[in-house]
Image (cartoon, rainbow, N blue to C red; front, side):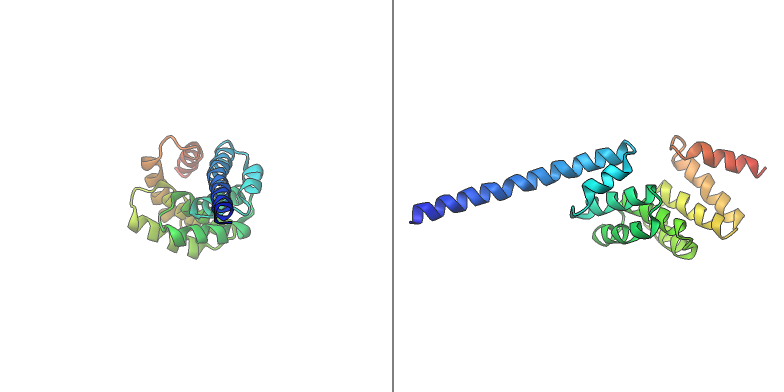
Length: 167
């Protein structure tokens, strides 16, 4: 009987190990979907996934689909585990600005900038929040810093155009 129990335990241990590896592959596949801009598919793949990366990319997928209120909780969950998770910070910034929670966005992005002064997207989202609060001078300063830090980002041409339109 002991042999059978040992065999059962070994089989179960092997069965438990396989899904863990599968989950890591699933997470990487979901992140790849996000990176390709397939946000709804990434969201579906990330539902029920655990861990800070899964929460961060779920939040980012939701934010990119303009599901701002829904994106806030997983972004905050990822940041609890890793306060400087760049994907989660950007998703939180986007979700707060999208919900017009400008003061909260300014506070969170300012905190991120204090911790990591070269994090471009903290300036981008804080600049967006300042834009929402009609604080053009602060918006311009943040957008200029964003462009210095991320001159080739996908948002850079739009930010340059906005700044040049201000004269």
